[in-house]
Length: 495
Image 1: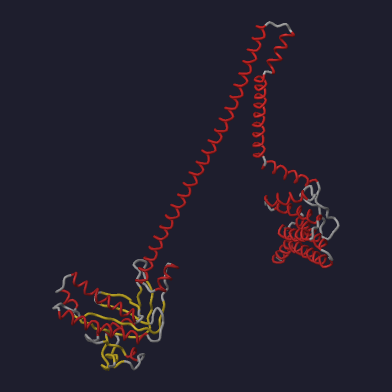
Image 2 (image 1 turned 180 degrees about the vertical axis):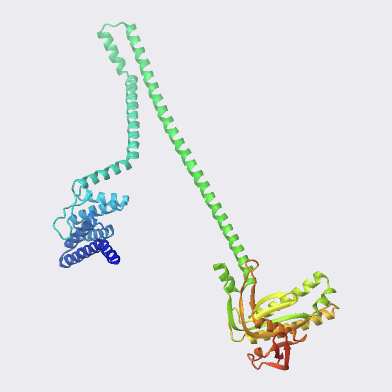
């Protein structure tokens, strides 16, 4: 019963969504049907614009579809110079961009709509279907309000221009006043006013003194007017000069700030770049150090996951080496000479096993351990390990002769090789070291201890995996500690 109720609730929730999807699908099918019966471009433009109006209606709101249909209908109307379609398309585009909060496009298409006779771009009353007859053209009261909003925005954008126009008008008025004062001065200089005063004095029977006094007063007034005109002119020049200075100071501050910000950005860029190079160099150094300790696959797994899982290898070949009479000879050498001699030998051992594609496992005192067939499995691991063992033996022989010719002590070496299964991995949480375990490792160590200096001693399990490129000397069954008797062989290269 509970599951049935859940299914009923889910069905009730999904039903409105499916109904909306079905309604939109029906309207799109109806739009396609109307387009298919249109015989001219003006009809196709009207159908697309009706569809845009439908999908821009709040009841059927789908702005992406509305924008698509409005753009298509407007494009068709513009192509055929269909004025009514252009006006209607611009109005719908303005409405859609307004809903999308795209102010630049809203203003752009709103102006076009007003230009082509649409007084507003507000909401459009439509029916439930783009094919119905309830669609009314743009131009209702909300559209007029949007038109006024567009005018308000344009007035705000023109505030600065109006202020500048007012300043220009004030300056022009001042210039007109100055021109009037100049004309009065010219009249005085020409004697017109003096003549009129003389006639006035004669007609009024004024005394000569009164006339002179009146002329003096008039001249004083004229001089005062000239002084006021000069003062206003100077004030205007000072105001203009002050404005130029302020603008120059502002431009200088902006330029200085721009240069400063540019320098800061340049310094930050090169600093970050230098820091990134330093981090990359340190990362490469740490990666190289990690790869010098661990195989590439193990190091990658350790970096990515923080640990490396152990792996079992069914068939690998392990080699052990050991210097003969190491304790006795080392007593006669200084610590520096001893470490240098071991380093020279082990460095050459590293070069040899790298040439043959083997994996160095570890060194324990005067013992050196490596393996072939891991971490990459291969079929010729025994062949490569034996060749590397013979190269090491030949190097030690040459090195002994060179040191003996200089009267210096030298080490002889025993080498043992065995093949079989091992387990490889990393243990511990500090000072990671790649190691291998199993009877194969112990047996390879016994092959080394059962051998003789100057020879490479291998087990019969390794012999079975070699080709005919070597000469083998069967030593018979030799007792091996904890392992019983085992067939052992000395191996040499064929001449």
